[in-house]
Image 1 (spheres, rainbow, N blue to C red):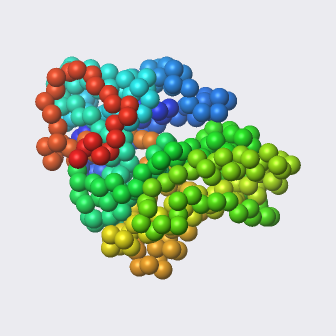
Image 2: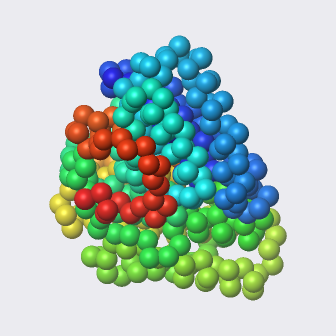
Length: 337
């Protein structure tokens, strides 16, 4: 069974083919990060314009590369939310058009669920149940994954997400968007460590995240300092240490609270090497197993959308096509329950 996946939730155009027997056949991504870096973040109308330019070209590219015609595809899965409305509508329109032309089921996918299930495409995957920490774009969420289509949110982001905090602080010290990877590189050259607050970490049973106060504290901290290259190195190290400490503490506490000995970390920030090393160390102390997607599956991609579409198809969680193009820019994961 082959599923076509389409991802256009933000500034990356993703097209993928997933086969339930062979796994990911192809996974193409066109990233706009270089375009948006000069603006310090994603500009919605520019993002949607570039999706429009690239999406059909990418579909033609995967068909040419794989020699798999759309007629052989069982269903078409696309990201219907959450995300930028102007970006989501591009993928949704193309998916529904192909669905109508080739008479294939069209499956709307929640982007966050796609990230949760991205771990299941990996060779090393957890058995149910497991704790999933999702760190993607504007989202930092802790869930218990009991099974496919069965999740429980135990912690949510109250304001700025981890990824947003990396990007916003990075922008202030002139690190181009997206700043997370650049901060990790700068952190290697630190000489001093600054102590920053770790919001809402005193209560072991509170699994919500809040990074807005940390961001404000650091912005005020920067204003009082001479911002040279070494300061940027030291700040990057301290910021990365603080954010990873918060993520690890809450995730480990959640695993202990719910007596679950498996943890998955997914989404863009899950590619952070320091986060993985520190999490592995803490998890080992507590006899907890850790799981991470392939680095290429951490950022937004269509393979996770195609795989999630496959799960929806085999578990009969799809509705009959009515060809009304629907997106939900604020589609929350708990609305799936």
